[in-house]
Image (cartoon, rainbow, N blue to C red; front, side, top):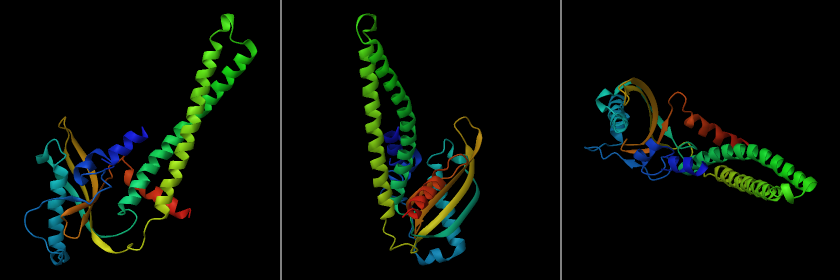
Length: 243
């Protein structure tokens, strides 16, 4: 499960992100929009021009993934400046995504461990009391299987804990020397569109774009019930606060 979700998010952190970034939506050098015409950094200083540019860019990006592109109807589009920080640091974000997966896998493994340990001790005691001969011939096999499963889960937990510490170390040691530097624009878009069954639904996304709004740095889905953006931020903040 950990590997499957990590590949989805690194193939971006998510099925849709892969289309925009060409890599896990949080790894890579960005996705070129190949928009026609030239955009100067100076022209981005004009708020009206910048808003118009952002509206055109997010429409193109979002419509690429709609069943019915013509149904795209923006409800709200907000543009703000973007400074470099841990949420635009692709290495840090990738580590946080994997860390969330690993912590979830550890919780499941520890629950499995309790059951495996109980089964191991039960079969061990049964074998000791009744032996494995005659009608009890199957006790040895049951004990061997329980012991193997118990040891496998112990090893898995140990591996996960080691992975978790390594991922935390990546976050702790992130290069913060560029933090606060202007690197582009963050564009929030809430929109409505038709799904494959033609029902109207709402979506919300946050795009992090470069200075000319020609390349996607990152894309975060922030639809209701999809807390990947908030989860990633909280995870990074928690690790950095524990230094």
